[in-house]
Amino acid sequence: MKKILIQFTCSVVLCSLLSACSQQESAQHGTDEALVRKDTIKPNVVIFYVDDLGYGDLSSYGMTATQTPSIDALAREGIRFTDAHSSAATCTPSRYSLLTGQYAFRNNAAILPGDAPLIIDPDTPTLPDMMKKAGYKTAVVGKWHLGLGRGHVNWNEAVKPGPLELGFDYSFLMPATGDRVPTVYLENHHVVNLDPANPIEISYQQRIGSRPVGTESPQLLKQGADLQHSRTIVNGISRIGWMKGGHEAEWVDEDFHTVFTNKAIDFIEQNKAKPFLLYFPFHDIHVPRVPNEMFVGKSGMGPRGDAILQMDWMTGRIVQALKDAGVYDNTLIVFSSDNGPVMDDGYADQAEELKGEHDPSAGFRGGKYSAYEAGTRVPMIVTFPNGITSAGESSALISHIDLYRSLANLVSVELEQGEALDSVDLLPALLDASATGREEMLEESFTVSIRSGKWKYIEPFSGTTPDWLANKTAIENGLQSEPQLFDLSNDIAEQNNIATKYPEIVNQLQTRIDQIRAMP
Image (cartoon, rainbow, N blue to C red; front, side, top):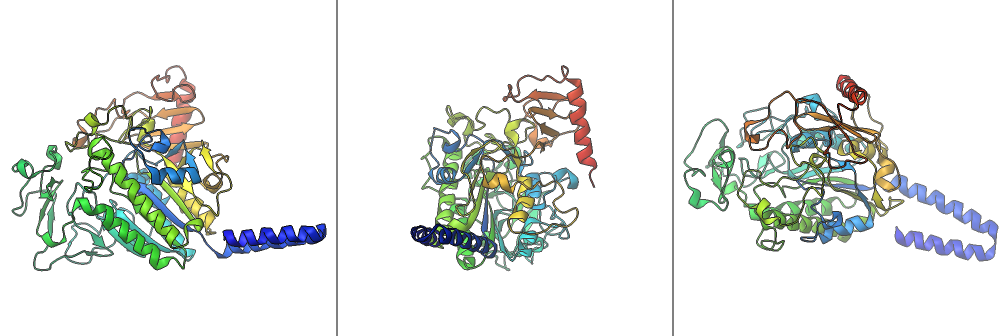
């Protein structure tokens, strides 16, 4: 495309030497050609969705302890957002919202166990469904964690419904998370390398099989773990849940960086001649953090820092594959994280002890699980050489839930009534660093918060948190019985609760939350 534009520019210059009239005609002709190209050559879309990456965990966002050159290169070429958010402070809800354009509370979506049924109804419109309407090939490669099947999955047969029933043409998955069984890859509907003579059985209720468990065989562990993560040991890591059989199909944690990356590159190579959507949800930097030896010790911050370097390397390889395939310039890339950072999340990898002066939350309060800003305020970078009109830093307020409707605009798909109910079309903000974003936005955690102008309001919390969250206090996560109100224009760290000073603002924002909840 650059070559075409250069040739066209030269033609215009030549025409200008002949006459102003012919120059004007050529310019109009060139504009028409550009519009035709935009309409006929649809842009590819790649969504990098990192797990548990904090706002401050990239060198392009201020990290100095180590460097993330591949992602920094995207930031230099594109738009670096400073007020972008995952829709929720935990993984399953934010992924649900990204793919459906709806807040997770509408489906009571919460963090799922490893044997949970698929929580997105196959009849629900999804982002890949929408992209397929525009003629796109679609794939998901990486961590899923949205449930599979209809409950009580038999991993030795076709596992469905799953991503293929939600609009993806191809899927290569970690079924749940790295710290949960089954510790196997699922390609489309089937477990990879499964030996029928050694079938898989999974239980989250009681111990099955004869595999060692973390509480009884700590000498077999690469990392110690809390009680929740101390059941079946696979590859030297104790997991949540019990697994029997399936030895031939087990993954090796240290191989994630090449296994997932190569599958993504294969998809790009196979579909470079047609428009495609690649959703690439990383396992990194989620626990257990077991990076490949090529990254071990390189960050100076232990396994968590090394996993950040691994994630950056993976991003770089996929971006290079786009360039090698000749499609990078016409690919819209969104790079972000599913929620804020967490240090101690069940494994003794010394993330807190080894971080030194590094602040993963970059001065914002909270982190993963939290109602405070660091729960959902995450790094977000957008690049699109053929589409961005103004690169640089953007302060636009934006949620990942908005990608659905924004991409529908990009690919010219008209949404049905009620589709992507909570999504807002912010395509201008994705392409222009000077464009504005949302005026208000919900943030989900174990309670609900709302941003409106300079105000941040956190709804009082009266529920309970899971047992495994017992080591994270309610105060740390913003879960308090009284309302909380902050003026982010002068209190970005949310240190001064001024709810009693502005009761009318509290009432207005609570009413707005109630109105959004009541939307059909």
